[in-house]
Image 1: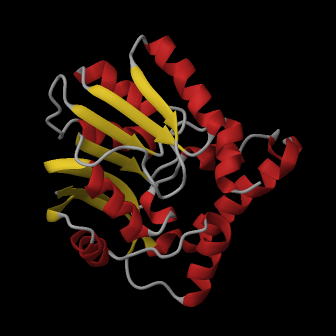
Image 2: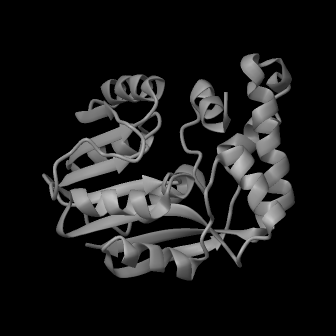
Length: 234
């Protein structure tokens, strides 16, 4: 079991920087229109996808590599009363033809994958002039080797780019007009709150140990991190 399995087992709804409050922040700035085709990559239990569908009436598709997450997301969509097409997908490859989405959304997904490969997949499935909205971690400066080693061990992150490097990666992948909507220090995530739960260490399959390790790493090295909300047009 790794960090992402632990989040799935706990049903954590918004593990990205700033949690659902951050989602609400960027949602208020995106001009979604009814009927547009929107894809969320790494949807987890579907909270963001259901909110977008409910609020804007878009044609919403959402994917995740974990079947248990997708099952929870489908149950959420029924409770919300929205129609979201939730699909299990393979790593690093989206199961869609080229140029079919108006927006691609990702929240704390890209940084934990080969970044340019993922950005290229987002660009591939976006229509011309389609928009990527991506909430991610960014380093305040190139990370020392010992810090990067911790992030690789716990999160499997290959790299944590600086803000300027995120823009360069987006350009490499074929995006234009890349902007940073918002950035700042990484805020506490829902997993931080779980650490205070007295039942934490009684959780099965090492879940408590993994969440506590996340807290340790963030306490030690969070000072190196910013969050960014990146918008890039194809």
